[in-house]
Image (cartoon, rainbow, N blue to C red):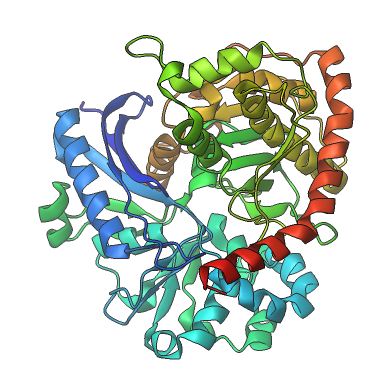
Length: 518
């Protein structure tokens, strides 16, 4: 008997990945294509939904070719994608405008309109007002009324691509439960739209998609989609999930107190819990559905934690870092930073280079403080690594206040940053929790593949499947003496972040005046 195969596709911020797996989780073939990001104005970040669809088609076709399997043996596919941005389609499933990315902060002007209802939004949706769906929808309603009027449904990227491949009508557009909290317009715990919130902001319910579970089959590959991708017509398409939800599943972080660190474009710190509890006091931690029924995640993130390191490498990673052919600049920087003591010689860094998301502050920027002539590039780099750990410590404190029963066993780390033994050790020392890298390069596409398998009955116990296929590398243990050294740095980091925040708005205004953009 021929084993069935499963296809998972991640529509990421920086690129699209498609991967074909067998039911044992073995990767058979994959493909990647970089995304096109557009920056038409300061604070605006856009993508083209049709380009995202085209990248998915290209990657699926290439992954199938590289796998060398009979496409007729593919049992199902599912997508994951970035969650907090929003797209718009007309009645013909065609984009009304460019996709309003999660990195886009133009809707900051509408956040004051949401502020009077902040407690209700946070309590019901699990997400405090920030640069997510509610503020974005209100922005389009007020600033682009023609586009708003033409919009039949607001939609996330994974649902746009899946729906197009399955030939859905606009009235069948959907959002899955794992993306729902970012709407800011939902009763997330009950899995429905909040009439109370929609009425308060005058948003017609008809413009919002239906709500489905990630493992629901939403349609089948059409003849046209089959021609484009090489998939057989009639292949089932599962609803799929948000990128962090799919990655958490792929990493096996599916039981209460499982901790998940996605060290990628964003730096995401997440804990699996069995209760939905909104952070109304701090507005820092989100409450979201997991893929598995009855699971939730308490999470927060820095919107460019990984991008910060890439920026540093590009700006300060001169040729002297690469001592030999094939050398990696990050590895060289890690070696230099590892020789330094905790605290980077009294240097602290704020990692919010493009503004803060939770709570939202579009004008917050990056900062090094405490450095002298005696400090080096290595000190500045180590301070960047430590800043993410300090931010995580702040999240953990709030998460433990919301869920005092939590007893975290270990952190499962994924993403490019998880390859850094130094960074894992710093985070472990700061948080006082063991760290382990997940021994799988692509947990996101594997998570989507498992969702596809569950949708067609291949994985009747998705939790057991996820746990059995998520092997961990060597555990990095926290060092008590280093944890004690870091504790006052965590407190000082929070104080500096709070004290300096008020100054960045003035700096941004001065910069706008100098460039004539204010």
